[in-house]
Length: 344
View 1 (cartoon, rainbow, N blue to C red):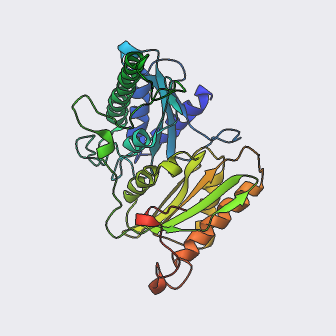
View 2: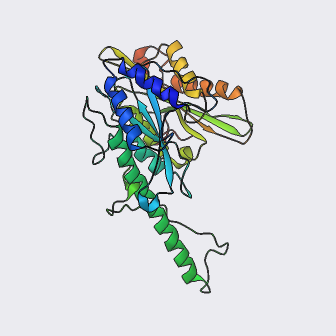
View 3: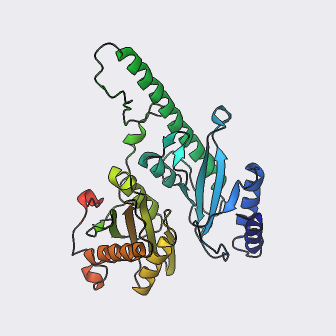
């Protein structure tokens, strides 16, 4: 990613009276995370365009590492700045790295990133105050605890394996068995911090589409404020089956607040998929709705067919929830996923 593109973005932001402070914030981040390329404009792989207008959602790719004790362990964070940041909306953080060191990022850690600005005891967002640095540093601490817990669990498993050697090994294949429990340095179980759906939110689920071993599942729900989106995505990611998908939360949403339409989308690694979902919501003239598609990759590339399936299951989920009917019929049809999560 060219540094000139980031410089152009900063220049554009400086010319916008409402977003000039973001330009100052990005420049400060460049000084703090001083390695070359540590701060860049994020765009999907193979995308040919990175141009952005100041009023668009800004997406930054922040690359940094854990503390000096683990300075060789780096990670990437996607920082999304909605058009209403910092006036009224916080950033949204998402872990881009698939692995932290040797350990695969799980749904617990992924969800913790999404909840950086909305969980009690994390980072308190104050309207009109910049918050990227505080969020990234808080997430660094969370990732470090998560990483150190896994190192400790691995050492304990190796020690237990050694103790059991010659005493009737109950695991004859020699595989290390790690408990799926994450105890933080404060003694709090991270798995115990469960996400909950916002009050009144029900998730509607499409029937799956299976093509050449890939599976696509759509989900849709009504939202009343953009701040609900990361909560819902985090809730979905707590389902282990969803979290294991190649692209678990491809999504788009539109929400009208006080007469202003807010909207955004996320490819979740499936290039251009989020934008296509956003286009679907626009041509259907829908608002106050979030649509999410999960894709399980079967090992065979589907090329353009994957977009057809993504749109199909998204539309099916919208139909299941009654979002394509008259407003009074919303959410009265179709089937709701188990406990609202939408297992299929």
